[in-house]
Image (spheres, rainbow over the protein chains, first blue to last red):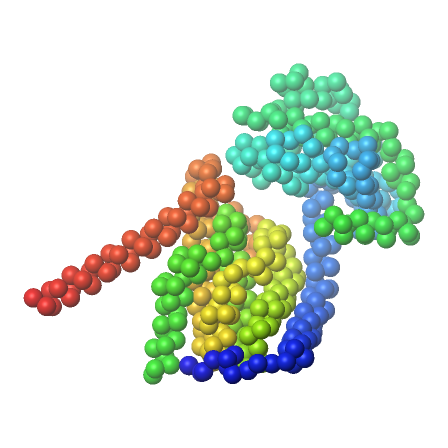
Length: 229
Length: 223
């Protein structure tokens, strides 16, 4: 083993600083190079991930626009469920509105907000609902996850007319939607959030699709996205 | 020859005798938090192994320039940039795993096992032994993460090696489903503590048993 080199030296503040600066420069260079090399892949991944994650809520809706460019970020208060920033992805087919995907939070779940992905066809019919994020109890509330049960499937093709809007509740509350065995808080919250989103869509549909000017709003959106992260 | 036996000793120390997780009980935060499944454990274990090896190598390579007054900021710099690189690499090539591990990749910076090896070993040894030490300690930590992850996944969800696609790509694999449901507690935070306690107890029991065997052998030879 070498003799401990530390004891032999008693450096000045200057040389310490220089060494530190040199190492900092090398480390920064290392990170910069890695960042340059990985950036294209990461961007591509994010795009694929966005499309993949919206797909299950979209059934077979056809669209031809760039999702990232048609995204609306709505900071609260936005009239949608949840107290977090709501996101709306708008889908067009040949410039005509095709569908919208809402990302909203159901704030009255069992443990923390449940982040939902809600796909709505232009006509107002649901194309699908997915859970993005939740902290519900594993084994009970987390059965709303599509990989664990098909509870979310019952939203497919539902709309404010089918079932009628006063029947938009879980069975225990006199509605038409199944609850989960042992857990009614989570499904109740999810059903309510979906219903509120549909109501919002009904009232604001044209405004949602018309807000097409991106320009400066895109920058604001990006800032919000950063804040969110 | 002596370097060989030395290397062997480092490896033994990392994997068993001084296992950072089992014996030194370092880096418990990621160990307890991410080990809900085997693939999570393996992912974070590999990332830690990589960071530990390279940080040991870098610290050892620069040890002559590192004055003791500034050694801690130096370690932090080196480790933080390595972790940033790892995070970017994960984001680029294992995006699913990156999302699953979340903040815990970035938190490798705070894994005290890494600073500990830099301070205790790499700053006093030549590069090669430092790399061996980094690999051994990292592997010990990774194996423990895998073991606890597999155990919690099996007990908690009844599956073995689920979602390996997050690390290796390809189609979604659900792994081998042995039974449904499972004992929920294992996946929850308390399950992490119980699993670690079990692992430490098992190691101690094995060590004690081996010692007793050695004692018996010695006694027999004496008599």
